[in-house]
Image (cartoon, rainbow, N blue to C red; front, side, top):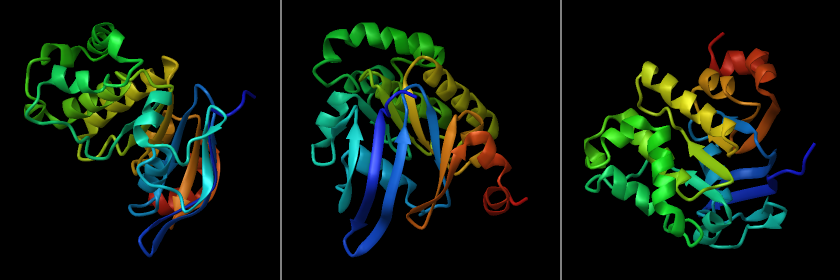
Length: 238
C-alpha cells in the first residue's frame, strides 16, 4: 500500500480544562474516502479542526505528505493542500456564489488559475453556474452545501475535510450531495468525512473510524462497519 497522505499519531486535544480527544491515531491514504462516525459531541469535529490547524493538539502529531503540520498556521496548511468545509457551511451570505468561490482561491498557488478552476467547479456543479450572480444566503440548503464544497475545491486540495455535509438537508438533497462527494473522490481528491448519517457516510467510503467520547473505538472497511453489531445497535437502531 502507498504511504499515507494523512496520519494523526496519538493526538489529544483540549478546550480549556475539557479534554475532547484522547490518543487519536488514524491514517488516510491517497484516493480514499474515509468517514469518522459517532454521536454528536464525540470528538469528530475537533479531529478535523486539529488536522486543519484550527485547534492545536495538546499532544501527538499530525503528518501530511510525510511532514509534521501540527504547529503550522491554518493558512499554510491550506497552501500545502488541505481544504476544510466546516459544519453549517459558513458562507458569506451577502456575497454572490461567484464571489464566495473566488475567496476559495486566495492562496498563492491557486490564484493564477482562479478562472480556470471556477469554470471547472461550474461544470461540476451546473446548478451553481445558473446561480453564479445570486447571493449565497438566498440559496437552498443543498445549494449552499455545494457552494461550500466548490469553494474548498477552488484551493485545489489534495485532501478535502468535510464536516457534517448532510446537516439540515432533506433526504433527497442528502443523496445528491453524497453523490457529488463520491465524484470528488473519484476525481482524485482524497476525502476525510465527518458524518452522523452513518449509512450515507459509509456507503460512499472505503474505510471508517468510530469515535466515542474522544476515543477511536472501532475501525475497518466501510462495509464491515455497516455490518458490525455495535454500530448497528448504537447508530442504526437495529
